[in-house]
Length: 317
Image (cartoon, helix red, strand yellow):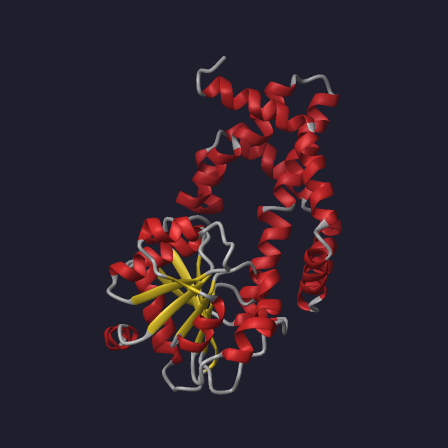
């Protein structure tokens, strides 16, 4: 069935809106699969040179909306609503299919697709441009106007991540909520915040910044690699007995019921749409809170320790 859907995709004009790291990888892999692909960019986009390097034809955004059979949204979540309302929706070709890399815009109501469009989610797991090396890709259908949205979504996923990646069925809601929660509570929010606090605690306790950095930041890659290869339980079997005993003794003191309550509050904030609304508002106001926090992070002593550690590892000192 996917083969038939892939053949059907080859008859469609596919337009990627945006050409960041993921867009470049998708464009190259779609071309390799024999699909007709162009890229919609703004007139002043810095990605035009990148499109030329990979041989992707560039079309104006309004032309893309009028002519594409399948539009793939790869611009940042927070700008999709305005782009949809101002450029895409007024010109959208009747019956054009819509693919989103995240559930954010549709689930939280920033994009309201027309009833005659297939609306699909195709979300490779992980960051960066190496699409062929993804181990998994989630997919879902929000609206099946044609009766073939499932086949189209799965075929598109196979085209961008290859035949061996695991395809995970999901919904726009589940992907949006899970993705935001994972970023905020674990991957980009909770773990880095805990690293900074652990670094500060060690340095305040008399440990040198270099040693503190290695022990609470640099070695996280060792642990994450073990978890990726063996799972959480397997990681404990691979580390030293001392580390395992210490983890069992102190882990629950950190990941306690107070932390669970905060996680539940964060999840509620995400599910309600409040975070999504605040993020769009932050972007529209010029991102003052983000810029302030970014500057504070750059000025934190952990960054100087990290730069020194990375130079030492590269043999530059």
